Image (cartoon, rainbow, N blue to C red):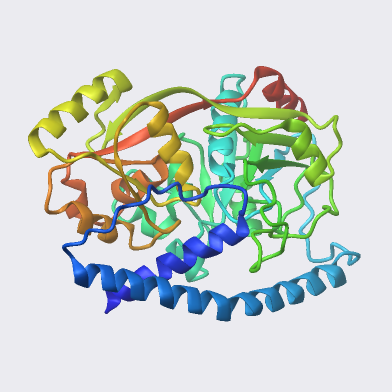
Length: 405
């Protein structure tokens, strides 16, 4: 019964994502043929499909009503003062604060953009720190005091801080998770010589007033242009504040700059960076890192042994992005989509691989949930391989950011 409920949840989520993003393939899953020999499985799938459709048609008007309530809330707040915002006035020796965020729910590329900025600004001698909510981590869920991410003892770091903060912390910069205003004070106290503080997912928060705001956009743009939960938008368009820079996430999709400016009503003089893949490597959970050519040999040897295609797991907001990259690399695989920020990721994955020695492919964000988790059993699987995308932004764009600091 729990398995059927999970299938219904997944099917409902698929329909919701299709409704949110009618012009974009988010999941990117290949259709699987129905096996005639398994009548029970076929009947289960039919039951799941019918039940999911019924739930969707019941839920849809409720989502619409809730979105109307959200729109009324935004209308009443639109002209309100920023009295609830903590203003941080920049002094000559204090760090610049830059908020990085998007306008839709998850997956636009905020964290990869943050990591890219950290690395490229570091080559210019600029030191950074990051403030993150730590979504679905223990600190976030239990509203605990802000803490710096520690990866020295990796057990349970993911459960405590969340997946994205652990991924950012791999760059070596201080990452503080929890209440943003409290995190700001802790960074200023512990690292008084920091040049830059990045607010990961910081556009909608009102705890800290950022000096500059960077919007990250991917091919989904504004989806169906409806507010949550009927649509994916976190806030109503047009925006009531200025966007100081724009990052177009081009890791696996093409995106027209002019279309973005028109959709979000942005000033066409806004500095724009293009997030692209500079190189790709593969790393397993034992920290063995190799290039794609050598990795193909690993795949070939594994297939000769198991006679099973590698399993590509994507527990991220836009699984199709990961699958597209694998297809461009000419890797044949079987796709598996798991929920974004899945707190049971390791457990759900173990159900797929414990009976086989097949290779499992995953994103860096998913890899964090294994490497920095308390699941000792999953770490023993040496066939888990993580796709490492080395990303870059144009030097002109990075120079614009440097000039803010």
